[in-house]
Length: 329
Image (cartoon, rainbow, N blue to C red):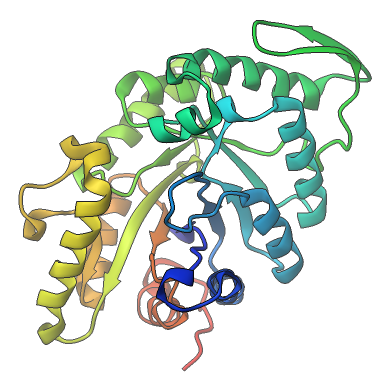
């Protein structure tokens, strides 16, 4: 089992801090994760929320490329219908060079209508724009020399996309998917799979099985690390902290739960999505996930707490790897 991070910086001007401080605390969080042996970061991208979420994920990742040594840096996700696909191909390839081949390219078609409205792009066009953009990006990274392209939304004449990515034929492609059809599509079209932070443990296990079965059906080699599962982390050390942890979980669900109401447990006490509890309880939850095939876990900590990372690295990670992760006291 390996561990990574899922999330992003959040500006904090609303509570009296400057925007730059919100970004700096996240940079400190990721650089410490790199030192502690976390393997991947997947950074979100959102627009027009008014909540200070990252809007220019690849800019932040380029900065992190210079501040880290080993951790892989990924997008989760670039919503392709909003972007010129050739510019995205150039930016990702450049980032791949700057990181020494540590980029994971997570993509999606988007789901927030307010963001589509802000860009004046009909959300009804999301699927066709996504498919068209991916065709162009793949062509940009695999065509020798110049090429032209004609499709409904994008046309290019005699262009060459530079630089070439360091990873060949291109950085690993990741797709966020949850439905049976979208998971099977991810397997067929060469994507790795990102599973969301709200899905219950049994749903995660079912989805991994679908992905693996489809890979086997089409003759694609399967590796458990091709599936990354986001899990909220709420680890505590004293029973007196449990009630507060449940309240925090309720607040988080109230904010993001409407996006996927069918995935939520009826009671927070029955919610198997978060790694919530004492270190032993967190280990037990991870062992259940590992037995079901989830061996690539992305921790979600909205506070980007270095102390939480160190505690997890010290008390949990050594139980799942022969490597002894160094953790600061």
